[in-house]
Every structure is written in C-alpha cells, then in structure tokens.
Length: 276
Image (cartoon, rainbow, N blue to C red; front, side, top):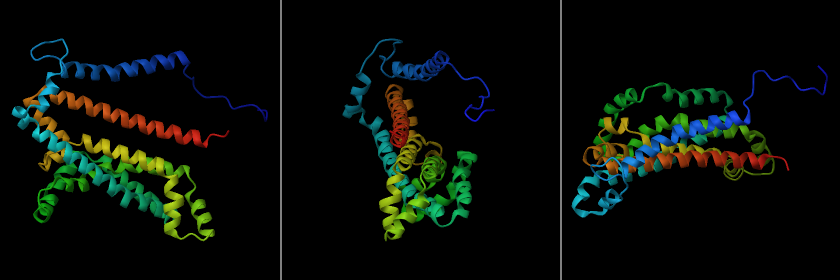
C-alpha cells in the first residue's frame, strides 16, 4: 500500500437515496402513533372523526375541577422532583466525576460501574426495595413527594453519567487544570472558571435527560403511593380519557423537544471545534 493511499473500507455504505428512505420510514413510524393519539384527544365525544377543543375548555370548568386536581398536583410534584434530582446530580455526581478525573483516576471505573448498575436492575425490584426505606424516612419527614428525588435519582444515574463522561472525555481537563494552577489559580477557581464552562454541554444534556426520565417515571411513585405526573395521568385516564390523552401527547412532544435540544447542543459543540 502506498503512503498516500487510503485504507479500503470494510462493508457497504448507504447511498443518499436509501438513507433518505430509511429516515422517512422511521419518521412515519414515530409520527403516526402521535397523530393517532392527537386525533383521539381532540375528537368529539361518541364520534370517530372530527375535531373539537371542548375537552381542553373543560379544564377551566370549576364544576369539573375536582377531576383534574390530582393531575395538576402531580405535575407540580414532578416539577419539584425534577429540580431536586437535577440539583442532586450537579452537587454530587458532577464533582465526583471531576475529582476522579483530576486526582483519583483509579476510581473512574468504580464510579462508572456504580452509575451504570441501575440500568441493569428492573425498576420494579428497586421500587420494592425502596418501600421499607421510605417507610422509615417518612416517619421523620412526613409523606412529601420531593423525597422521591433520592430514589428516582438512582434510576437517573446512567442517563446523567454518560453525557457528562462523554464531555469530560472530549476535554483535556487535566491539562486545563494544570495550566490554571500554574497561573496561580486555586482549585475552586480552576473548577469554577475553567473546567465547568467546558462541561456545559454535558451538564445541559444530563439535566435535560434527567427531567425527561422524572416526567416519565411511574413505577416508583406508584409503589410509594405518591402523586406525580404519571400517576395523576393514570387516574385521570378513567375519568376523562380525552384530556389524559392530550397531556400524554404534550409530554411526548416535550420529551422529543428535549432530545432535539440535546442534539442541537451536540452539533453546536462540534461546530465550535471545527477548524476554520
């Protein structure tokens, strides 16, 4: 092989036409269930076709307000749980990963093993194990929903770990910290002003994935008998399936927007690194 020749590629590559066809088929497979859910959510009662906004107007009806009280309360609880879970991730997981990368590199594999372990354990098994723990916790704190953030945070660990680890792998934090320290900055100034700004993309992706997982979590909240968005949606399904379908559609679109935002953040990071 000559010095200037390129190595031959193994396997066939997809053409532009075939790639477009596969993308269109995948898009239709994703969009059609959303269309069916939306068609059911906005169709008139007792009919199989048509469009109406009467179901959404019923949300402001004070007479039927009791039907939606648990759903609104569940949404508020899920938002609080999501905020607390993101805070726990930023306060505990992120510093541990940065410290392991800078000072204790032997602990990186241990942290990765602990963070990825929950994805191999069924959520039902974890929920059953949480029941006796939370029975004792609630004797002290009372039955408050935000305490679920500590349990859901365990499930979120794999989804929060990967984006941060990928960002750390793409940034030479050791060299950055040594350069900052050589210029006289302390460890706190180095982490706050040098390392964290370079990890914003991973932190944003981890936070958005955490929010999407919290909004979709049902098993733990159901076992621990707490009202969250998913448990409130399940209860509303029996009373008003049209409004429940509307909120389910809104949640799916919200998660899709989160994934699109993560993809846009990744593309932005690659464009900044591209040479001019």
